[in-house]
Length: 355
Image 1: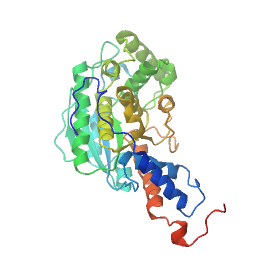
Image 2 (image 1 turned 90 degrees about the horizontal axis):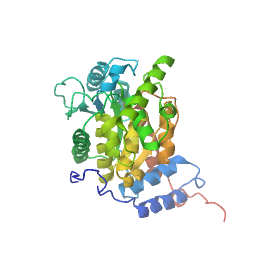
Image 3 (image 1 turned 135 degrees about the vertical axis):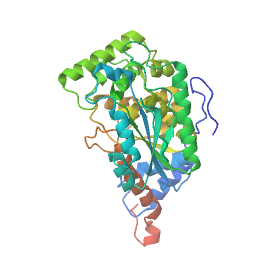
Image 4 (image 1 turned 60 degrees about the horizontal axis):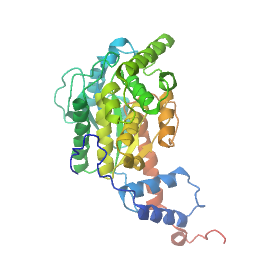
């Protein structure tokens, strides 16, 4: 996998889905000891994985959760219920294994790696940490661009390089997550810019702001969009003007995973915003995205509708970190085990459907 050099990342070579592998899985499903289609999305998941991986017996043994972290200048405007220092504190919690994503990843036998894309403080070396800091957080997008285009491109490449390194260790599927106080504000601004919808239509409560806080958040996003005028036809412009460094890193990770035929489990609102941007950069990435859950953030439903993705479950989650995506590892494993371990009618000596 060669690091992309195109400024807009539109010419990254992403292989098409392997239709022959998809068809082979569909044929095997028709031979298994069950009525056709009776396992619903577990069957379609196996088909999708086969097409992504380019093999008729897909695998999900090698799993990783990649959490990108960065701070946001817009947090100074009180758009979050938590102070900015929580970003650093939670990153340390990830590295010490004490966060929800660590628990859920251990349960799924997936490794967790954290990428410092722009945390406001310096972090010590750690075996599970990639130090790829582009800046000590973004600028306040309400007052001007969150970052320069050069910084956005640097963050995109950093994400690409992280997945390139991780892929060399062996990966079948990744889940993507994030940490960054203020990142639902940036995500809502990105979604509003790309879709043309009003900030009110895509902005939720994030970490749990009250009614007054929600209105302040919407006002800040409206002002940021008016100040920066991001061009929806140019995703790099949107990303640099109202985005976040961790969001940019996730875009690079998603694009790099697709280029390497690695399935990408998309988490909630922020990770899905990165997926929306990745598709805007390069539409060929879309078949590699698997939506895991429906977040309570109102903008998340907008993104899933925009991408035409159907989430696997709705548990009322809004934590982020990749938590919903990590839960989906179990469904993928079930789908693959059904395909690979269930007996066919011929093997079990069971009569098939009457013709």
